[in-house]
Image (cartoon, rainbow, N blue to C red; front, side, top):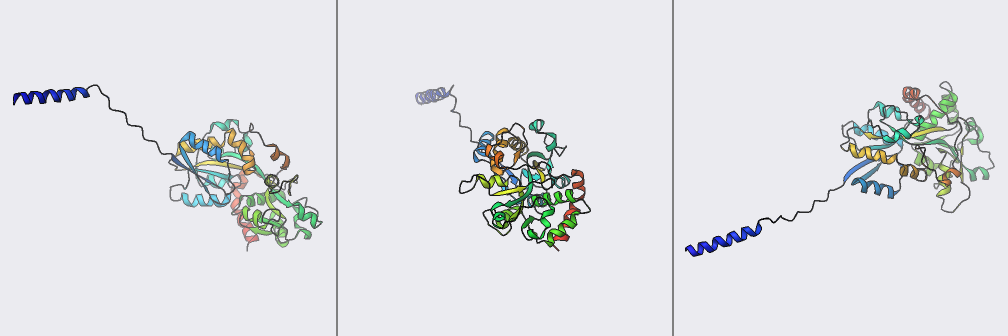
Length: 358
């Protein structure tokens, strides 16, 4: 009995001794699942997939883009969803200077003093609080279908006043300024040109001359405009000065000249600056800041011209030759004091609605 106990004790000691000094193999660290960053944009937003993939890889994040419609429609959607206290997205891109004051009044955005702001010209930094950070700019102008005017042997209008002439009856489609950023831009251009005492008379003349009103830019350009793929009934549309470049570069059949042009007479266009911002209440503040920095980086800024046909706000960003060659830049776009826009925008839009839609 003693011998068996002794043998058992020796065996246990041997087994225990064999374990002393041995470190258990470390278990592999679990792979961290990427966070999700949601970015709300207008329907025209586009960026190269390679750039997004690079951002996702560098930050272990999955970017989810939500397109909310035209810029005005998207802003309305964010205002409504923010009432519950939880934003629908983390970042908002596509806010422009025509709707800027409304977004700031609604307190939708959080301030972020992005490092790149030091390089961006002051003319684009319209929000001193840095809640809305400038990303790009462009000009809203009237586009025309060159072939249509040639076929009908009709001269292209050279001013806003020309659009009220009988020979241009029913030839122009515009967007509702209450729901469309380009529509609001065009309204502001007419107010700047004809003054607060004269703009309604001008719009009455347009109405009498058969101007067509639709809700958003996509409908106006791709359904009504004869110079686009929709081959609609109107040979003139409120769009962008860079739209002819897009028609040239992305034509199905290679072209040597853009099939559309822009009316860039003094006061006929409106300079539009687009902003991005971090939505108030986001649980992903740090990632949201990184995405803003990404949008203001040289690669993103140089990617925008051929993706969205806008100009970068970063002065060091280089423009593609094809973009420069086929874009028309107005020398004297219409302007209004931002404070005046903030004060009277809603009243102007309401007056326009009563005049044009009732």
